[in-house]
Image 1 (cartoon, rainbow, N blue to C red):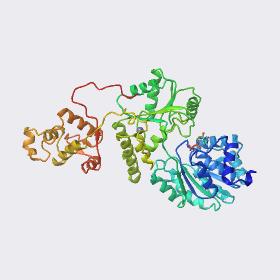
Image 2 (image 1 turned 90 degrees about the horizontal axis):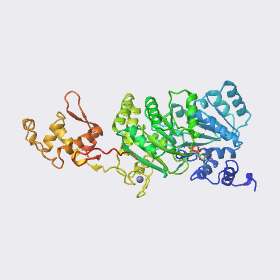
Image 3 (image 1 turned 45 degrees about the horizontal axis):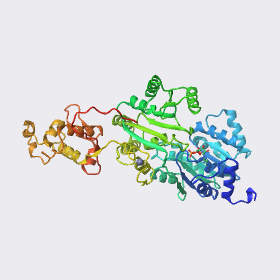
Image 4 (image 1 turned 180 degrees about the vertical axis):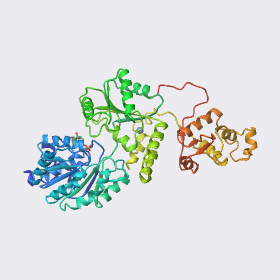
Amino acid sequence: STLATMPDIQRAEHILKEVFGFEEFRSLQKDIIQNVLQKRDTLAIMPTGGGKSLCYQIPALLFDGLTIVVSPLISLMKDQVDQLTAYGISASYLNSSLSPQEYEATLDLIRRNKLDLLYLAPETLLKGNVLNLLSGLNVECVAIDEAHCISEWGHDFRPEYRQLSEVTKRFDNAVSLGLTATATPRVQKDIAHSLGLADANTFVASFNRKNLYLDVVSKSSPLQQTVNFLRLHEGDSGIIYCFSRKQVDQLTQDLNANGFNALPYHAGLSEGERTQHQNAFIRDEVDIIVATIAFGMGIDKPDVRFVVHHDMPQNIESYYQQIGRAGRDGLQADCLFLFSYGDASKIRYFIDQKTGEEQRVAEQHLQKLIGYVEAHQCRRIKLLEYFGEHFNEQNCGMCDFCTGDMPEREDITIPVQKFLSTMVRTEQRFGYNHILNILLGSRRKEVLKFNHDRLSTYGIGKEFSRPEWKQVYRELMKQDIIVREFEHKSLKLTPKAMEILKGDQEVFGVIEEPVQKERSKSSAK
Ligand code: ADP
Ligand code: ZN
């Protein structure tokens, strides 16, 4: 039978093979494409590398009219269009990177109905002349890539996205397809609502990347920990993420001094240098890229064998995106996250500069990330829970918890509650030693002077020795449950402490036997 007489999905399969050269659809691609071909609005949620592009590229070839692809990633449009052109597909793009001549030439192609696919930056689509031109054409599909940008609940809100639903309404004959790799249930709802996709069919692919080994290690000597890790990955390609440009430069230097082969990548470098470093990485001329979050958007290198978070990522979504750049080829890749509460405080400092809703959302995102780090269970549970997925395998075999590499952290909720309620009962006016004297039932002068031997918490802390209580105290400070007031050295509760006192949150910590032992430095494997 000829292509024209085949049922939709067979035609789609035909194009998959003949044009793109792939044997079969990946999970959900088929359902999504079928749905789009039937002109039913669709929301597609798939992890990075899952194969979202084909979900609009194939329908674009089957529709008579034009498919518009809205994407905020201007730097990636050219790559996509070049790739499509290489497949013999007529595609082009409009954005601010084009010269006036190139821009005009593309408008001309559009006017003459020469294109199957047109990529646009959202702000370009919103321009009067572009919109008027497109409104006069047969637009059959509007694909909105990175659709989470429409939601203030996402990590990448872009105000122009808010106006897109007005725009899509102007194309009567077009089906809308929202696509994103990062959508919590809340963001999903927001996208559907904001894009006017109330009746959209939603397809959510699993976010579990089985081949990524997830490891979170307490950061003690970051350079040494990183070097130890890299020694196990001699010759492999990998990415190391740092907080700031300065740290990127420093770490790159340190690694090269340690005999590794690394290049930096951050916004302080010229565009030429960035491209050069990125290409060197893609072509295996350099093993390691040390980068700020600027690196990795859209790089499609299949054999990245490791991702190290030398510093804390902004939130779970960024973390997931960044580790997602490893192991695209399906082979095992190792993800190491060096965590410290100090890094969390740095991020909190930036959050405190924000205001209102934005601040609240950022704070919540940070809390979720800390929750992930602190959870004493399979790493995949919290990670996937964040994306609305329930992970219930007994043992994933691919995280520090499931392989028994997580240090023993015990539930210290009850001793912590005793400590905190003693602080409450003494009106948060005392320091560590006084609180401890009460808990241990001491008869010292200060205790008696304030009648603190009559408190209900007097002497209820005898399950721990003084050195053990010291470790509890350190955990409290580290985990931002209490803070020490500078002037009077008295201890104060943070909002987190309230949650614990109410019994809404558990606390875990490493409490070692009170023998003065040298802290093991083996750390990161
Ligand atoms: P996303 O946009 O979801 O991050 P892409 O659309 O860029 O992912 O696809 C990721 C990679 O997977 C690309 O190299 C693409 O060619 C490849 N790919 C997509 N669909 C298939 C398929 N059905 N079979 C084989 N490879 C595929
Ligand atoms: Zn696990």
